[in-house]
Image 1 (cartoon, rainbow, N blue to C red):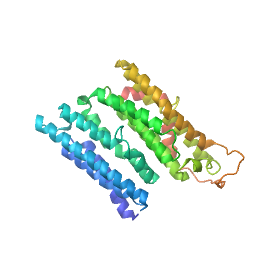
Image 2: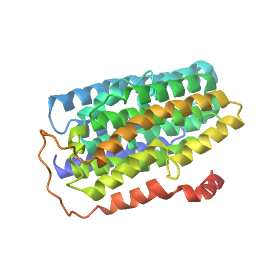
Image 3: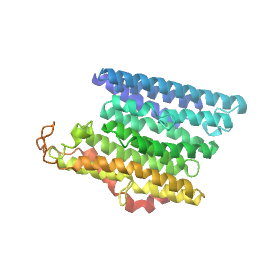
Image 4: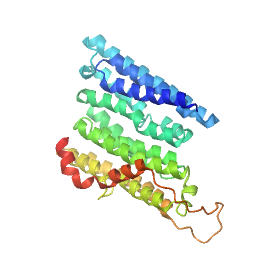
Length: 346
């Protein structure tokens, strides 16, 4: 892709995100979401492969439908209350339509079907943007309207997302699809706590973004798209494989790694809110996710058994690890000891 064009698309992406997260008016928020959608489409389809074109088309259709619902929800609210302010979304019908619209934008169950397909058709770097930056504006809108959303509906969507994200990720062999289902499962954790402690949703999103960025950048450096390639990667880059192993365990939420922190705080908050049953269900469902993270981690560090394989043994490459990966790895693994400070901030 032409560097100037790439610069314009990346700038538009951050411009759209900034407009949405800093706006008070629904129409401005909608404009930011539209700029975002249009800026990411060329980045999805830049390889000109039929799969990439299909992914871009699916993404466009879903996001256009979700944007229409956002606009429809805000217009319905303005019709009944005379308010265009994002925080003044008080009409129950508008709240329900907005929940559906943002669920489509994020890829929450039952509006999740597009997300694994789009991620599978995109390059790893675009996949990283789709899993992190593109989810920030919709989550901000949820954060701003959290006081007027329906807790029962959100808890149902959250538990379904955690269940389906874990369950569907079990038999995948493509790393991008596994990361997509991991994203759906993490969105369940963010959504379940949204009404009770919105700041925890944001904290969970920030930590998830850090860990996912580490995984995607490591996979991109090693050029790994499927599990069979991952199994021969240890000889090529042992240090990166070790980083991948630890970050995946952090994503799974195992103590004493950073990924345990949001799960711990969310379970604590849910029990305070007399939702021990929901906390127990979502904790048990996270075991499904743990299984496929362990599978990925096992494949990343496996020593090949003595049988003939279709893959050539890779040469060991002493390539320096990127500074971004190093910084993100430290953050993805070592933030648990400062959890009292993080908890006091939120």
